[in-house]
Length: 134
View (tube, helix red, strand yellow):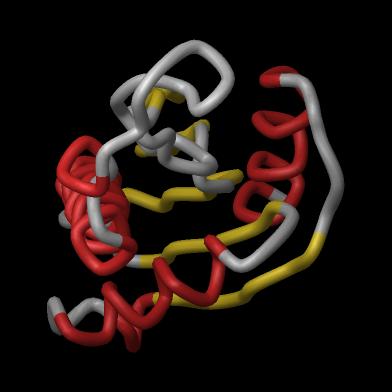
């Protein structure tokens, strides 16, 4: 059975449209990645601000990368069985996901990467149908 996937992705959300011989299915994955990790502890304006209360930048970066990896793993799990994968969306997430797909052995299935702005779920599904069904 043929399985083709198109996905709109950024670091906050992925909309995955799966087209098979029998049906079309849309899945949404929401990431738990915080755009900018916040420092914990008291504010200097409200009280003492000891160095121990502020996580180091490298630990915040590791947490951000870990959350991003969990998110991309969930997206890859949804597209793993696809014969063709079309990736589109704004920002850097497209290239990051393509790189992860290559490391998973799925890089040769990527048929295109396009930069597009925000789209509704219906617009995303229509774009994927247009690419794979026409």
